Length: 312
Image 1 (cartoon, rainbow, N blue to C red):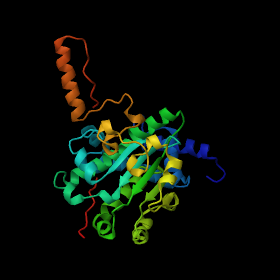
Image 2 (tube, helix red, strand yellow; image 1 turned 135 degrees about the vertical axis):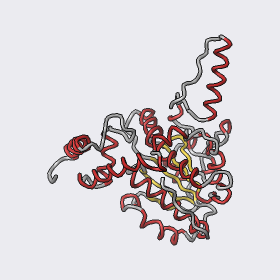
Image 3 (cartoon, rainbow, N blue to C red; image 1 turned 45 degrees about the horizontal axis):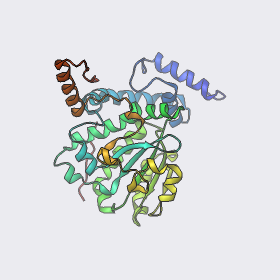
């Protein structure tokens, strides 16, 4: 493929994916140019390697957790499921508004993780399903909505990882789960992280980073900015104050939505019709109103391998 432009390689890539029955119209992985380019960029436009990566991703999507990602997504609305508050309290990982470039914020409060507490109300298998559905929502809902709001292609996120209170003991306990999360992101959702800001990095972070860095591609590692506790000005250069949670130095509290970590607020909520228990309750209520005869219509309802957790 030497001498071919990226546009020409993309055309060949698409033709071969369709021709070899790897990609089909309507596949939820996405058939648009941006999706295919992500896999090509992840493999430096090597057609053979990119095609293998895409094929592996399609196979994973069909088989993960024994049912496939599409079925998991039907079962679990990422913004509305029964265990959501418990998950977000013990494994805080959420989307919140957008940065100055229009990229969605993806916030991880690693120091607040408490798997022992979480697994009392949400078994490990179920928790892992919520992690997968959360990752899928980025590609399926969050990024497309961000692009529509920005009026331009938006293909990646600004990830903010807060390590306040996170030490070596906690890292060794959950490193397998963290590694599996990284692997899912890199292998099946490539090129989604535009920038990673690590804040409140403890003095032990050099040891933690030494363990994490080999899990990351060189391209991903190059996008990481490690900050200490003096991070506010850096984040405000990237994110408008009204979009940055107050807990991270911004002005947003989402007070009327249960707090920033639970709100899920962002362009992806505009006109969104969910299918979780809250949406179902609204649907049932709307159906009751319809029976009363005021003309309102009920809401429409749209129809992994588990990593181990090591003991410290």
